[in-house]
Structure formats: C-alpha cells, structure tokens
Image (cartoon, rainbow, N blue to C red; front, side, top):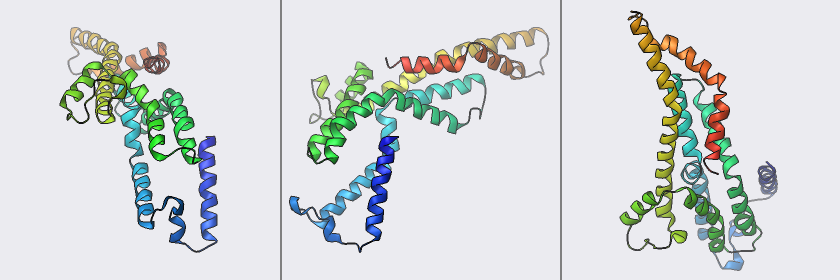
Length: 245
C-alpha cells in the first residue's frame, strides 16, 4: 500500500507540474544518453504495452492459476452456479496470490526495480534482477517432465542444459502447464467428498421410489452443511497456500 501511495503521489506531482507549463518534446529526450525523441516515445509505448498485459503476466508467472482453478472446482462440486460470484473468487485468488508471492515481489522490487528507478543500474541489469526471483519461484514449482517437454520442442538457439539458466520462453509455458495440472489435482480432491454425498443421496432416493425428485434438491443443502461443519474454506485456503511451502 505504501508503494502504491508513493506511486500515486509521484504521478500527481508530475501531473501538476505538467499542467503548469507547456509540453516540450525536447524534455523527453535523454540528452545524456544521446537519445532521440522518437526513441523515447518508442520506450514509452513499450512501457504502456507492458502495463496493458500486466494481468496476463500475473496469471503466467504467479500462483494465481492454481487458486482460480481450485476455487472453480470447489463451486462446481458444491453444485452452486453463481455463488460465490466470479468477482469474489477472482478477488480471493488475487489476494492469496499477493500473499504467496509477497517475498518474490519484495525481492524483485528491492534488488531490481528500486535501483533502476534510482538510476543505480542499467535496464539490462535490472531485467535480470527483476525476473530472477520469479525465475526461482517458477523453477521451484515446475515439473521436470513439463520443462523437458518444452525444452525438446524449442529451437536449438534457446535450449539449455542448465536448469537454473533456462530461457523464460521455455520456463513460463512449462510452469503454466504444471500449475494447471496441480490445480486439477487439487480440484479432484476437493470435489470427491461432494461426489460421495451425491451418490448416497441418489441411491436413497432411488431406493425410496422417489423417481421424480431431483437429487440435487436434497444433496445441495447437505453438501453446504457438510462444508460448513468441517470449516471448508479454512481447509481449502490453508491447503492451497501450504502447497507452495
């Protein structure tokens, strides 16, 4: 929150200063680096492009995928179509992602982004320092089988025999496949108890000859009650976070 507030204050300061004077394209030119206005504009367009795909980057290199899939399975297993709402599940997944990724975000900020903003390191050096913590996180979670698959399919120019220096174009898709697989594994374990309840209720209804009564009418309250009695949200959220331990 402090960083967001600082960024907002910096933006407000720039906005106030800009409104008090005319726009000068020459001020955009990095004279010390011998750059041009066109080059500076290209850099600004690149920054805006990165910001526009930030949500996609969040999904690709963090724990968000596993959380979102697991919660989707949970809602399906309960038999609820719109409760909790998508906004609630996505928000919960997002804040859980921030919780799990906090050490990675902090290292990336302190070792890479902050020195870059202070003009202590170059962009090339900052790129390695910013992506380094995310690389370590993905390497700790990716399956060797998925990593080997994308390494075998990759061109010879980006292949590597050193796991620690694997190209991000190989690591990121392998990490995503691994996260999707683990999300489905966790989702199966979540829905299994609810499936047992559905089978028991269906068998009882059939044995009582109540053919016209939908089993979901009885099984849905029972599944919700069961989930509440075992403190299901605490168990699911805790298990998901511990899976990154």
